Image (cartoon, rainbow, N blue to C red; front, side, top):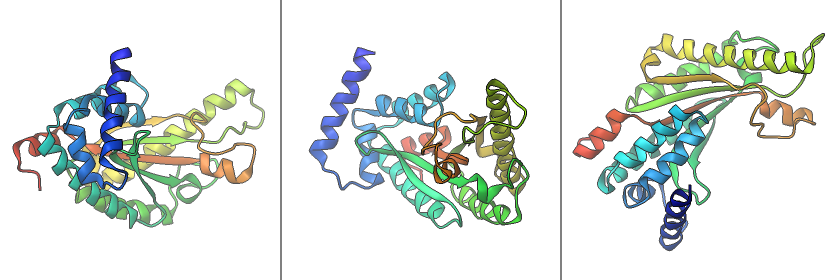
Length: 238
């Protein structure tokens, strides 16, 4: 753990010396220029808290050389811009504490995607997901992770423990609905993980209606696949 923290500290120094106005292309060079494994580990933790996801992130960082990192940075810039044009999608760069972008996070409000307490996609949601599928088709080198979340509200006639379980089940069913629809659009092969995390990891205050609405969401993550890394290392990534 100590060596990991030292690696992060060293990378932070690189970022500070390089300035704050970098785009993903420049940041990609830093990934390969000394902090790849550390940043990759952060990516894995952001994508998922399980060991497998962390290992994926570490492998990405460790495998990318300096030139390859620049190529991947360009690719992620394009994917982020394309995703930002999708209706009802909130798009963010996946970054560490110092603003190093490693992937793309796309959030869909569950209220836009689903009726209350349901995992059946609404018609308007299908339009947005069709647009998003087209983004994935244009970025076949990106792998995808899907995560569903709920607020912390209890279920009628249920104990607190039962409500937590029901929220986890609903969040998984909603994430799976997104997965199935995207797969039907021809991009299922890019989806590497699907999780339902229920009321865990709220992004807003559950004590307010507005906060609970933000917490009811489906997040989709795009990150470099091994094929993208290999193509970048070989200098053939377009």
